Length: 97
Ligand code: H2B
View 1 (cartoon, protein in one colour):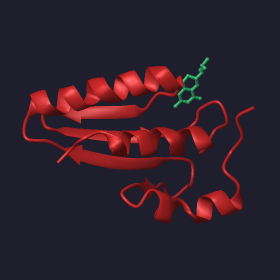
View 2 (cartoon, helix red, strand yellow):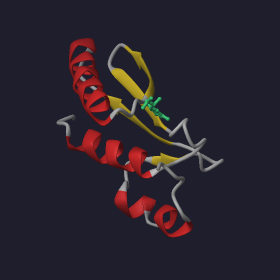
View 3 (cartoon, rainbow, N blue to C red):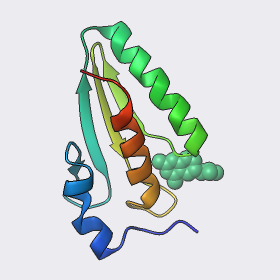
């Protein structure tokens, strides 16, 4: 069963995911990635898409030329869950500038 992160799990987010920002309402995390050009950004998005499919957990995101903005939230529980943390950590492992 998917559940929202508990108090202790939320407290360690800045340490666990230092590059990600927790939204003011606490229901999502976000990170912006910038690349040299569109092709590099699109390549990154392809890799994230494959991760997302494998994890059956999908980002809300946007792309503008070399910029990819990712928001992670678990819609099924209306907030943050371990699935968001797992996907964020996997995204952080993908090579990017
Ligand atoms: N992605 C995200 N971000 N949140 C979800 O709640 C979610 C998802 N649910 N991907 C999954 C798919 C669910 O709808 C399927 C049926 O497992």
